Length: 268
Length: 271
Image 1 (cartoon, helix red, strand yellow):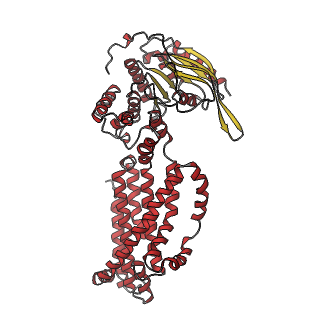
Image 2 (cartoon, rainbow over the protein chains, first blue to last red):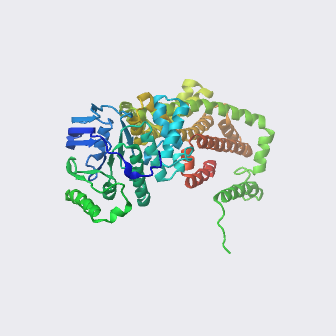
Image 3 (cartoon, rainbow over the protein chains, first blue to last red):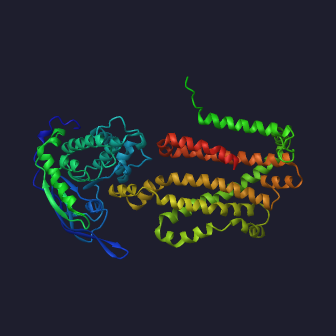
């Protein structure tokens, strides 16, 4: 399962909608009244698609992700995930992967991965077996007994991904998961993520600051404006899959990246 | 060819040995009167001949330190965790406790002796309260520095509120708890010894005061030496325990942390 020989044999996904957001707005309570954070977000994410959200800092990308995860309530509008609203976190439907800082330092890699299962009270050997399998999927077989501080940044992020995948949710939300990594590790991890995505066929909503990462990973890039965040552009990325590093040097890639940059740059 | 810089630990041990050497030999040269600084050997001789007195005093002091630590460390960490963790309590109580912290609590000691007598009870009460505030405030500050992503991630993984507390908040606050234990223990020892020196009839602090008034210098220094050893032993014990429990902190910053740790040992000894 972890060695997908032919990346091109990815089956076409059924025309099912994984996430549906309609008229979503959010206002924060500030000292001088409300601070509008998100404004009239409408989006629809097809099952199995890889969506990347980019936008200037503070545009509400993370807030949007928190709401998709059921971690935060919106002021107005609706979010449905596979047809049902998500008022509270539901790890069976939605897995969330944060930056590396969210691994628990007092647990080993394998204990971190099985943490969601232990919360549910799954039997010990069952969850150990599954988390070992997950570590294998992300390419960390043999590292289960290490503590996070004994792992490199990229390895920690692989553990995070394994933890997000272990309950096998159809949707994965990723909040700048590779932001703390150096450029080379970041590229490798992006490539790894596509491999895992291909092997598991999740619906992914991925937030990033990196335009290159956005174009490289996405089926579609959503560009958000500065606060209050609105979606100002939806860019389908037509580059064929599997994506290769060579594609980054092509004209098409450069044009796509430039189109995003122009939109973000316009914002003062 | 290359001159290697000696290991910091080697230098520290060399300094300690030099200090002990000077302690032994400077008084014999007559540069300093025996009254100011009795030689190390005469100090040790007192400890050897009078070990029953000193050991008995040590037991009294230990007993007081133990109970006072229940107040300072036990109470301080518990109240600190509550104040740090619960916002309404924090807004209500933190300003009060922060200003109380500024009060020199030693002025209350005469009141404590009036309430609890000159026995161990007044020392326990004084030292316990003396160390309670710093421990409580540092715990409250530490609890608030728990990585917010830990909580968020656990919630996203479906943790209930009790699970959040037992599986995330408590392990995440262990480093803070141990910092509180180290600080609290050291301050409690100070509190007990100071109160024994002020008004009492037992304990090591009492031996210091008693022998100073009758100018028995080597007996004073014998008591001081015992307190030094007690403080350093406590510090090293707390450190060792912390390293075993909080593996990720001790190992995570190994080179830097290791150096810091051992560097503080002689500092405590001279304090």
